[in-house]
Image (cartoon, rainbow, N blue to C red; front, side):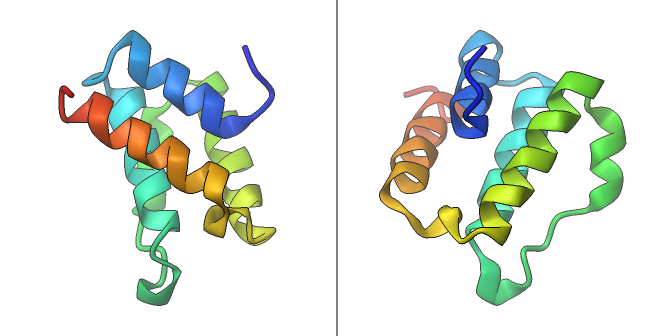
Length: 88
C-alpha cells in the first residue's frame, strides 16, 4: 500500500466505501479540512479502526499539522473520496 495517507484512505474507501474504517477515515479527512471549526472529530472513534487504519489516521493528523491539508493534492483526494462515499 502507498506510504501517502491520502492514497491509503482512497484505497480503503475504494475497497469498501461504507465500511467502518472507510467512513471513519473519511470523517477524519473531512474534519481536518475545517481547521477554523476546530477540526471536530470524536477521538474515541479511533478505537473503531483496526491498527493499520489507525496508523493512517495518525499520518493524516501529521499532514494537517504540517499544513498539507491545504494543498491541491489533499483537495483532489478529498473530492475523489466524496464521490466514492456518495456512490459517484
